[in-house]
Image 1 (cartoon, rainbow, N blue to C red):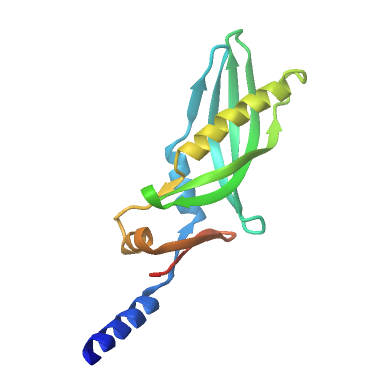
Image 2: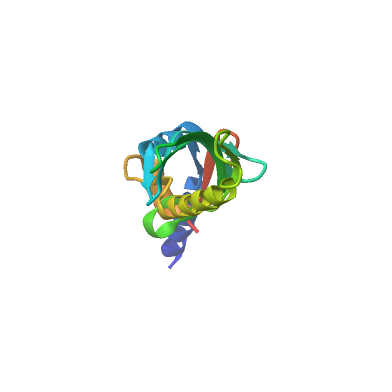
Length: 173
């Protein structure tokens, strides 16, 4: 009994000392984002292409931001080029060991040559497409490639956004 208790205490201390943080740099996340781009969504009257996206981490808001160049091609032969910025909260989903963007919102939508009377409808439609895209597809999925990511799959407890990285806090309990 005494040895069993000593073993359990030693195991507990060992596991607690192994708990640590792992870091996903802004560059790591940008590389994952780049794998999905450019992306084109075809609709009846137009196609929407999102490319050249840049990811920013907003520490003070605990959100991430994606700034993208957008091209809208209509069936009427017109082309509209612009840019937009979308931000959202980062969420970890344990079931598939992936990070997703939740609560996305368009914070910048600029198309100089898009007629003003259609801009609200286009922005609303684009927001709907983006909401589906960023909430359904993971930004990053943990793999077995490194010891740290393998540990994170088992022990990730929380995530925190810093200016240059996302910190995943690990804990065995």
